[in-house]
Length: 148
Image 1 (spheres, rainbow, N blue to C red):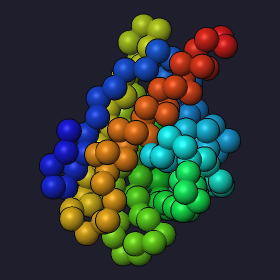
Image 2 (cartoon, rainbow, N blue to C red; image 1 turned 90 degrees about the horizontal axis):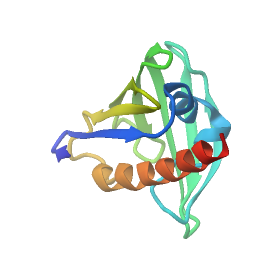
Image 3 (spheres, rainbow, N blue to C red; image 1 turned 45 degrees about the vertical axis):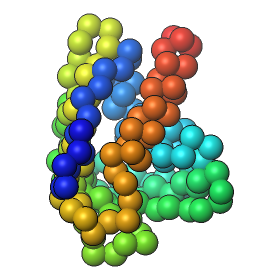
């Protein structure tokens, strides 16, 4: 779902909240799924997952174009909630905010995701980008679930 200033997804993943939390907070794991291009790949991630900590994630599209997003964690409640600022290195000054809520549901976890405050300033199509990114996350978690 998208309006002018927010993209919201409510998704269920067949993994525990701990596995999903790890996918969002472990630099090695996030590089395995982050980025909207299905042919893309993660390049580098640094993540200091604590209130006031910063992150930087760089990924490359299939055509070789690199993207880096940066931000600061504003609220961290392990296995439950992440709230952080979001900015593209290529779009300085255009800051928005992401909120992630996790809710266990038996052997799976519901994820409520909201990216808000970007308005029309960004050149990125967040609805399409996040949808594609979450498809990659779903594929990774399905493999993780089979390995257990």
